[in-house]
Length: 254
Image (cartoon, rainbow, N blue to C red; front, side, top):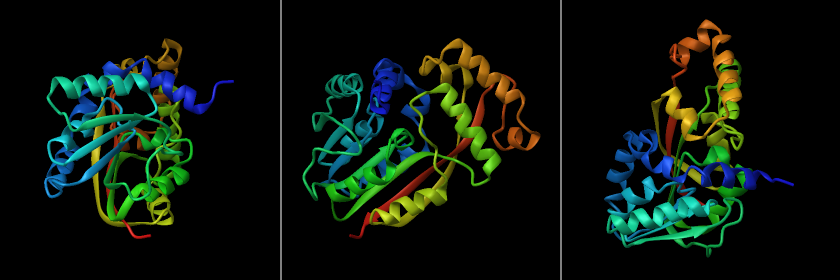
């Protein structure tokens, strides 16, 4: 029987190198924000949760003492280790495992980051409780992810195209859901930033190797969207669209 974790490993393991070269993942205002923030913590031990191809790890390694790149996919971690070696970033270590059950000591990390990963976690609440456990007192957790609009019609549209494109997708949570998850897990919100993220359709589906029949289904679904939905997501004739992403900076309080 194929579990959700198996599906995530399959989806992303096969596409590790595509994520390393992806412009969406390799650049953005959130990485600039993170670099500036981390420059204030040169002695920090940082965990990059759901590191993917390692873009956060590479940025962080130039600013902090040590980085642990953690992911479910062995293939992703191999890409991170190889690229870190090539770039001379010798303070990056890799570790494989689940978000919901982490192999780290209590109070191990000064800072934890997660970028474009949490919408794949099977149990966000359990994962955040684990992150609280391994964060030092008053340590930071920084979440960077796509967020869903609060309006039900817009929410359903986004979740549908995401799930058709990527069968390991769980949910893009709303800002309100994130605030609830984080506070219930013991984190205090310190800063919020909203940005718009444009997804070019061709590279978006190619990166995930979405089957042709599902690509066609996405296009048909997009064509049937209401004018309000098309306007909000700035839907283009080629299927490209723009969605919301949020940087949520928090601090451990319990």
